[in-house]
Length: 232
Image 1 (cartoon, rainbow, N blue to C red):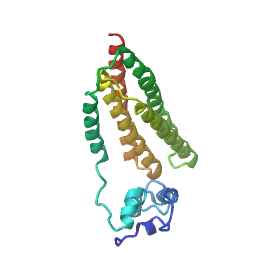
Image 2: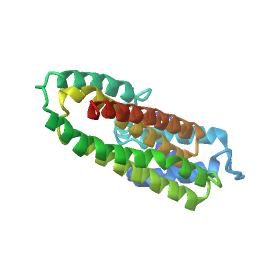
Image 3: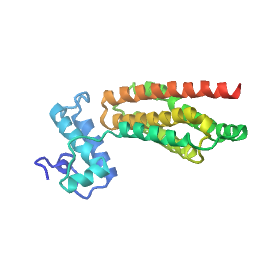
Image 4: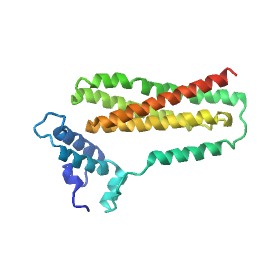
């Protein structure tokens, strides 16, 4: 075990559940955050708390930590997904040519529901941020924001299930690839918003907003390409 015990820093037992660890982390951040206006505000302690939660908040990293195999830095998950996406869609291009009816069915049963779900996630963010801006440290306002994040994660999961429910026609490979990247960016954005709801670090909020803006552009690109196919 390292010289700094992350469990002690978060004031939880070694057997604490992930929910208990997350609750303890949020409670400590509110106590020590420099912007919280509390007498206990402590920048150095916040650094230690964040470092501890980065390990214990992730079940896999926590297991490695318990086995004295703590990684030095998070793995590049987003870069790995990008490489996987290229491999995935190049292989799909080898599928047999789809008929007009198959293309139409994919657009109606896959693309349209996904567009509706993702648009619902993206279009609600600004209103949620405006509401939270009144007082980010207010438990009720933050609770509403966390509800939005949870609902967004659920909608994203539904969209991913729809996307994987049937193979895309080869002629729609470019559109399907854009949808795939859009879903990944939305997922990354939700993750950043969830981090913000735990530690009140504005950098996570700004990163989440930027990822959602990229998702908006990808979704718009998909919509434009779909219109070209439909009107062809």
